Image (cartoon, rainbow, N blue to C red; front, side):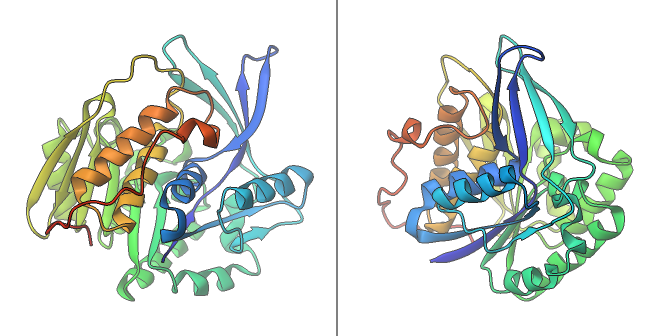
Length: 322
């Protein structure tokens, strides 16, 4: 069984029209991936979430539901002076979303300042993999952000594989330059980067996926996935100089694109943990994301995934990840 920790923030989600019908649940990019990974990896992985919540009723409810999903909450710190952040999703008629956030004083933002974070750091050194996103970094105060990067570098040097989804959100950063500087530091010790072509174009000005892959290789990334939405994805192993393109299966009706990238990451990582090929990992990611975007909300009902087979056996292949 592989041990994997995912670092980030989960917030209260309000989904609907302002002053109209509103559905309340929870979500956050790294938490979404943790839930979908726990569902798809099954007994092949111990999925740990690393964050901070309050002592309020909503925080208690989140903890309970994550545990019901099979996500370990042993590394979720509790803050008696802060609560979870909150966001509002509004959807257009094509399923595209816009967000409003209230998160500046959330417990997760200050998790590295928690009295017990050193215990979390020690536990991270025992993981096989640690996953984070650009949002995991962006929400932190600048000094804490650097502390986390330094910790991740130490983990990588000790043999822990670092997985990084850049997930660039300009509003969370002081400047694009600062985001680029932080990302460059993380790339230098990243085992697997999971990036989206639109984000890379916005942050770095990349004109196409080949430019992105070449930049990631130069930065020190060992392996990379470039997600291109409905088109598919590229996977490249820079250590063996092998590149693969995997197309998606078209989805007839897109309801909500929230969590598309997060769920792809989970499907891909479930394949990675099982030792499957890059093509199979990518196909699993696309299948899961294609299901998720046909439902409302960041985390869809478990029964909506019942038709997906993730644990089927794959013939022995010479090309496996890590």
